[in-house]
Image 1: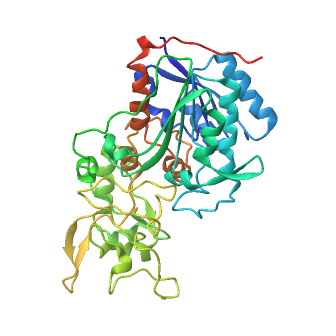
Image 2: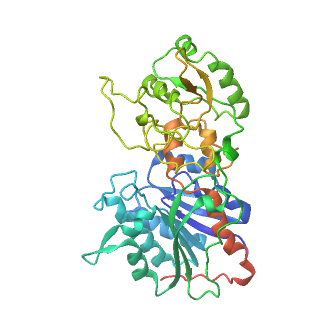
Amino acid sequence: MNKLKGLSLFANIGVAEALLEEIGVEVKIANELDERRARFYKHLYPETEMITGDITREEVYYEIINKAKEAEIDFIMATPPCQGMSTVGKKDPTDPRNQLISYALKAIIDLKPMFVLLENVPRQNKTKVRFNDKEILIPDFIKSLLSSDYHINDTVLNVADFGVPQNRERSIFLLTRKDIKFIWEFPEKENSPIITLEDAIGHLPSLDPLIQGYKMEEILKVFPDFLNKKKEGEAVSKWHTPPKHKIRHIEVMMYTPEGKSALENDEFYPKKVSGERIVGFKNTYKRQWWDKPAYTVTTYNGAVCSHDNVHPGRPVSADKYGRTIYSDPRVLSIYELLIVMSLPLNWNIPEWADESVIRHSIGEGIPPLMVKKLFRMITNSSDKIERRHIVNV
């Protein structure tokens, strides 16, 4: 079989697709609602036809379907937005974004591709949508609509078990059309050691953060070696550069050791502008561990005060009272995010993209190494698969 040709729905900036060309898989058509993300995607994948717009609008939906038919796609890959389900979101069962899965399923029914990859946060398996005026769990919804035409394999897997240096669980459905003498299976969990943050980013130069509202001479009073570290980081990559944080966040993290939250500190703990102590979840204002994979990268990976985002750091000095000070009181650099997300280190990020859109978009993606290993289960058996297209009239 020649290259697998596909349609990517809710395509984001194309995080999932980043390694597919390596194994002869190409996305011919993609759809993304957000104009900046669609532009980012088109920059990365100029050969893919990007349809920018809301899939819930009839004219956009049928443009996607017609273009996909023209391209004779073999697969659909879809990651409907998860903010209504995510454990770091509001977990709102009535969030209208939870219903977007129905458009992916409608596209599958209309196009009948040979293969389908549906992926989302594990909580989707406990999330209900409305179907025929009833509430139904998303997995049951998928199976009720598609099990007559497709073999359906589903599981929750952790990408850390497949060579990605990040603990990130995903609910994944692999569908194979029943007329094909092949069933898309999951790869076996790998026996190789888990890749830790030390393995992944421990060799990179330390960085001091930029301080919000401070001029350079003021930053140098806090971090005398700031410019030397910045230069060393930029020698590795233009994306290994200092993130910017508030001074009150930086100060508490300077006194917070690896694996701990600043909320646990007796003296240097997070405060509001008023000086009142902040009360929050113990995985906020928290440093990661060197001997474990990264925690799940979220859309808020640029915020010290969000979940499990802060660099592990290392003890580097002591203040005049003998209290230990730790390096890297900051979130991961974009370059470090590329590593823990298994994205190419030379990924062609457009120069116009600001840090916010880069971080948020990466945080919503599935690590492409995991996607590559899933599709390799098909390409490794391509000699057994006869390409068959079903054209709906």
